Length: 172
Image (cartoon, rainbow, N blue to C red; front, top):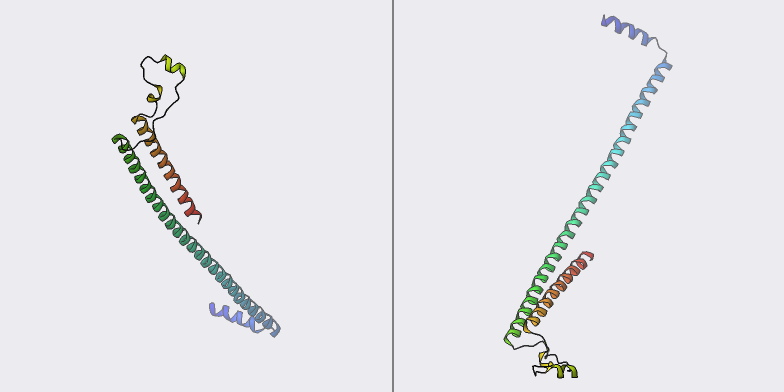
């Protein structure tokens, strides 16, 4: 049965004029050429797409490397600022402690005792007989308080300076 089918098909094809064969051959060549061109164009587009993907991956890798380098630089700047702040605070604390110890020992005075001119009313109204000027000035506890507040203010200044150093490092 298959043999009969092929005989019939071959007999039909044998009877076709050469012009039909020429048109069929031209159509087959056109389809084959179009298929080759389509595949070549598709390969070109795929190549361009691969090139674009590689470029994007390269850009991302470069950006990540730049970000890591900046993070490292920022961490180093922060560590340096933190160490500087720690040292400055230690110096400030030692200086304040030394000053307070000198005040307690009496080897240092903040300033001479304050003297206020005594008015006539104070002199005549005084029953103790002491002059008003000798009662003026800072007590030792007052001086210690002022030194400790100065130390606290110096620490705030040290923190602000450390923050400024970190910001300067980030902007560079």
